[in-house]
Length: 181
Image (cartoon, rainbow, N blue to C red):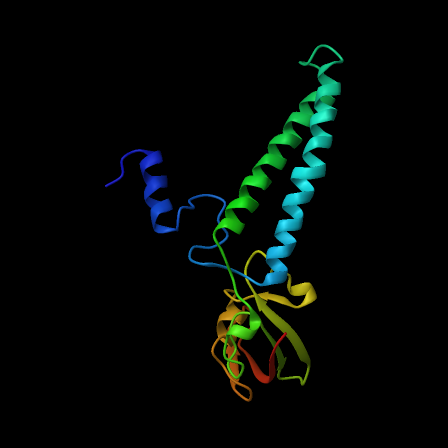
């Protein structure tokens, strides 16, 4: 049984694939090729442009003299820590990523990477693409496959009725089409 906080973190980390803080989810980290590319682009932007720019700003602020009352220096150091933290996070997410090609799954069943058209009780149609937590943005139709709606849609077929629980009550959805792009 773990006794110290460090031992507890290591135990949780071993259960969650090496991650004990800052993880979005335990288990596999699925990404679409486009999602992996976006993360790679952010990594390159941070490491190649943003971080060097902030390093120069911090060096300039440090050259001004007294660092104890130098807001530019303090803010720059804080910004560097934030950038470094984000770089470590993105690197770990990419290292643990499993990139799923949409063409590598069954096309008649909803799986990761599927674009699904659903119709609700009011005959309102919505289109969602099931993606991982790193890519999820429901405002543009990218739905986390681990969300309640995403989990409800997984392994369903065209014509199936899905019931989703929500605070307002249950919602009945019909699957209109499935495609993989």
